[in-house]
Each structure stands twice: as structure tokens, then as C-alpha cells.
Amino acid sequence: MRNLEVKREVSTMLPTVWGEFRLYLYTDSIEHREHLALVRGHLDPLTAVLTRVHSECFTGDVLGSRRCDCGEQLHHALDHIAAHGQGILIYLRQEGRGIGLREKLRAYNLQDQGLDTVEANLALGHPADARRYDIAALILKDLGVLRVRLMTNNPQKIRDLEALGIHVVERVPLLPTVYPENAAYLSSKALRLNHWLDLGDLPHVGLEQPGGNGQKPHP
Ligand SMILES: Nc1nc2c(ncn2[C@@H]2O[C@H](COP(=O)(O)OP(=O)(O)OP(=O)(O)O)[C@@H](O)[C@H]2O)c(=O)[nH]1
Ligand SMILES: [Zn+2]
Image 1 (cartoon, rainbow, N blue to C red):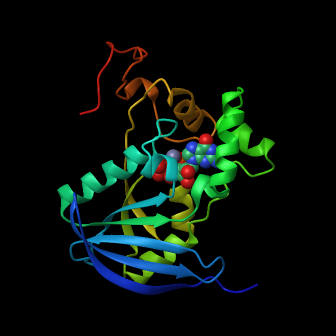
Image 2: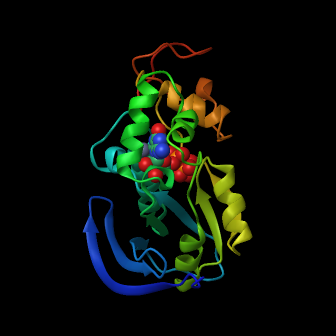
């Protein structure tokens, strides 16, 4: 089998609502997908860099879907990087936990019939999570980054990056808002995928907060 490599194809400046970033476009040598790294500030190889490794979610990231917390996590990660003045967001093209958009939308229909996010993937003949982080590790190494403060709630992502030679010196939580439309999905992430999410501690909108004092909208 061919060795996985990433190739830096283009680097350009990108002014955004979160300020100015350098945007790198990489291709991988296996599936020839285009992955992105958005870099703010000077990356000091001796300092652990505030980093988000984000998996593509067209419905959440672009359309603002409330079925999931992806769009909010993306924006929170960019808020943190902007506030810190330095950091990296890697955008991996592994839509739908690696099963692709078409299959994710089919999985949504199964979830509407009562399956949870894991059961729906399995019913369609896919693994619960088909993602890989080796491309992210190679991009970080290409950028000279071996130590990160990783913005995530996903313990598996940390284990995978550590196994690939990226030292996660700190986990920075990304706490989503609980809406009626994503409550079941967030609790499946906690219970079935072991994410560090305690729904009782999260801000709730349009739902009674379990053990809390009612509605607390996200600022
Ligand atoms: N198959 C499937 N994929 C989903 C579903 N909801 C979100 N996704 C995808 O899941 C990926 C994001 O994964 P998450 O589990 O939300 O988060 P994570 O990246 O593992 O963990 P964090 O670092 O904490 O965000 C994106 O690729 C989304 O498209 C779903 O119900 N089914
Ligand atoms: Zn999503």
C-alpha cells in the first residue's frame, strides 16, 4: 500500500471576521482530498500551540444545523485562537465521521426513526467512527508543531494524535449549547462515544436544564 504523505500545495493570506490568518491547502496522497490549515500568528516550536483538529460537517459548519454542535465548535475554536492571538485550525475533509455527506444524511433519517448516531452508522454498514487523524498529524509536523493544546471533547482524538507523535499537553474543552434538536445527539456523544460532555453543565436554550435553573442562552 502507498505511504500516506501530505503535500503543501498553496499558502495564502485570508482575512476573516476572526482576523487575519495564513491559509495552507494540503492534499493527501491516498484519497487526494484537499485539507486546510488556518494559522494565526508565529508558531514557536518550543511552545504548545492552541490547536483545533476539525472534521468537515457541511450541514453544521456551513448551514448552521442544530442537529449537531460542529458549527458552534468551529466558531468557538476560532474565537479562542483570535483571543489568544496564535493558533491553528486544521480542517479535515472527513465529512460525517468519515462516511461522507450522502451517508450522513441517510443516517439522519434513521435517527429520525429512533436510532442513535452510532446505531444509524452501523445500520448503514459503516463503523461508528471512520475517521483518521494521520493527515492532521502530518500537517502539524509540516508546520513544525509537535506539541499542542487541543480544543476537543473527544478522548479518542487525543489518543490517536498522541500515537501519531503529536503530544497533547493540555485539553481545552469546547462546550456546546444544548438545544431540543441536538440534545439526544449530544447525550449519545457522551454515552456512546465517551466524549467529555456533561449535559447538566452545558448552557441550554429552549429546554429545561437538568439539575439547573432553567434557560441560559449561549452569549
Ligand atoms: N455519521 C454521522 N456523522 C456525524 C453526525 N453528526 C455529526 N457528524 C460528523 O461528525 C464529525 C464531527 O465529530 P464530532 O463527534 O461532533 O466531534 P469530534 O470532532 O469527534 O470531537 P470534538 O473534537 O469534541 O468536536 C463531522 O465530520 C460531522 O459531519 C451523525 O449523526 N452521523
Ligand atoms: Zn456536524
